[in-house]
Image (cartoon, rainbow, N blue to C red; front, side):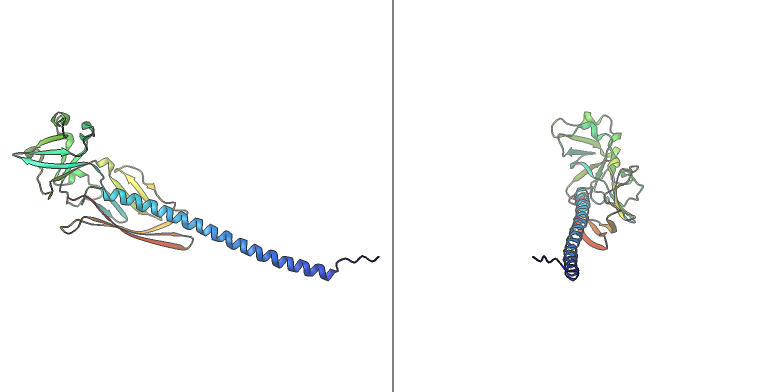
Length: 251
């Protein structure tokens, strides 16, 4: 009985065909792996971009109107601590605080503003505004607040405040809560207060950010608008976001 095995040529052909099949399969696997990695990178970029835009939009839209500071690649503003309405009564101005559950003592170190329209520099505090009043100068403000409706009165002659708000609105803000967004290097940073440390909101090693931040003051036709024009880049790909944020409050 004669047993016949593979010849050398048959083995070589078999190995050659197998190698071609393995290379083909490896190519598909590599292509799928690259596609997955690119999808993860795009998802990371989109996630960071959405986080930055959502945070900036929420804070800027509820800031004190018209007190926005643009300095190079930085945009600064003051969040509203409380707000309400005022009424002139003789030589006094009476105020109603909107948040009736707020502790009265928390107002003592805040600044009260009416119709803020003056431009501030990056180093100016709220006291630099013409129509502002430091609530810390009110003697025992808790005694002047009514237990019903959270109202308080400031003598007009002592405060130097004047009206000017179309709807008699007043705002209470705090210098220590000033928020500053900066495009620094290839990152976006956020700083709270005048002496706080800038905190990066994006990973500059993975996602590079460039662009501009600007502000258009309110007019009789529209509220103030923050213009956000940012480009997020990663791995040679860029995504551009252009968004206008309307400041909901009116002077």
